[in-house]
Length: 184
Length: 97
Image (cartoon, rainbow over all chains, first blue to last red; front, side, top):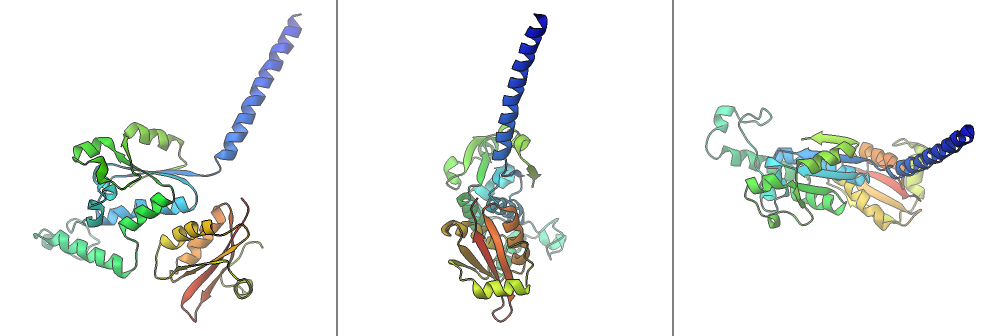
């Protein structure tokens, strides 16, 4: 009698485990597509490019892509400010301007203009074009709520399709589930 | 067709013999736009159809190959460097998922 009860109990456990395996199999099939979360923190003209290029390309691979923008990177999602991102001449060893010259008034504007010209001459996509294309391909752009308030921005300032009202916990939750996590 | 190498005789033959259903001109555009626009354009191609991508970006040879090999529903048919016109021509076929 005890044996029969044991067998019955084992049978139930096996059935339970089998159904779990089925669930695992299905979810593996669905998880075929990869996912990537990028945390973007920089808002200068040069640093706007790496997250946008990676995000748009990953979306072209049909990956599930989220870019969480915080601090200065909010400017990339800001419709007006994104068209006028600046570069710093000081402390940037890649710019052909000595630091001392870079500290002169108006030098950042000169450096930014130089970079913009290079971008245009080389037919590199503009920040705006990369954002619009990424949105079209389903990239989820998130604007950190805390920084929005810190910078005194309005929700309407951002491109249509940008998600607001999210914070670090949302980003972490998505990062935990993602295949690739990057901080730019 | 198995793995194609860029610029082989087979690629040249494919380029000559296959009439693409759609053509995407990304001349002048640089990374990441050739790949990104190819992804957008492939939506206009019916299953089994072929898209020709014409690019001036030398990085597109590696990028489109990489994109096609790791994306479901597309297959790279051929890639050639058209030296006469100074362009790279990529044939991408849309397959069943």
